[in-house]
Amino acid sequence: MFNKKNNEMKTILIPTDFSTTALNAAKYISAMCKKTETERLILYHSYEIVHPDTILLTDILEPPPSQLGELENEAIRKLDILKKTLSPLVNDGTVIEYITNDLPLIEGIDEIIINEKTDLVTVGISGTANDGKNVIGSNTLQIMKECKTSLLIVPSAATFNGIKQSMLAVDLHDIAGTIPVAQLKELLLKLSSKLVVVNVEHHETMGADTLMKEETILHHLLNDLNPEYDYPDNKNKAEGLLMFAEKQNINLIIVVHRKYGLVEQLFHNSITKKLAIKTSTPLIILHKN
Image 1 (cartoon, rainbow, N blue to C red):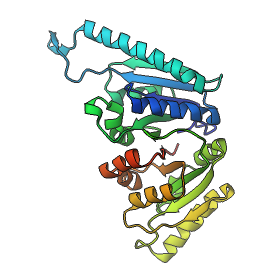
Image 2 (image 1 turned 45 degrees about the horizontal axis):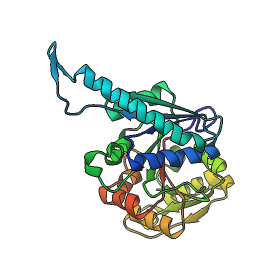
Image 3 (image 1 turned 90 degrees about the vertical axis):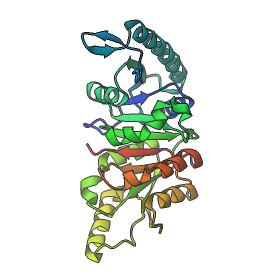
Image 4 (image 1 turned 45 degrees about the vertical axis):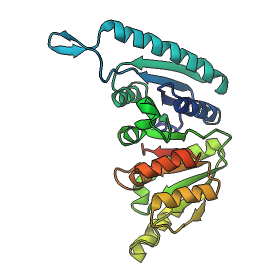
């Protein structure tokens, strides 16, 4: 997520389809940038033509050049408007740039992450497919699975009013090897946010010695953050986390990226819909550097 040398959010990528949901996410992270002292925001739009009218060129089907040119010009026009909309929300030292091309969305995002040394990707999420037009909203799950860096997901109802309380959701498996402690500390320091650590699986079958060992490591790693710890009892981990976040007025949910586990459960379709429609709590998925 963060600049590897100092764990800071120097460059943030904001993919957009120019929907209301994507605009809200862009406004949210722009306001948050004042706290994180971000240097660059990169706006990105893919105008990939999935089912274009095509012409035959040396046995390769391609959209007419005129159509691509029109789409590019329109994308540039909208990106320029978005840049002007966001400019008053960021610090004077934050540079807003934009990129547009006809690459598939995930491929375009991955290319920018590598070429621009992106520390964080921010997308919006909506409870409806918006007649198939809300590309970012309908593909957030795919972006979550494929994104090569940390990801901030902003529900359509979220507004940035500071982050007083953050919730770190953990499962007690290989704590030392999975939690990006330096990144977490830098984020909470910049946001001046109190941390609540929540484990929703303490009643599951786990040897007492293993449980005690993992809890000890967890407390040691996070000790200087002076967090609170809570152990809500819910057979459905994702539901338990969301209920806790709502009850405790959590402003940011933090989970750690793992190939299998809590993140995938949290983004089951029904949970995603609930996160988008019934809560306004953004969620950040941290990738360990």
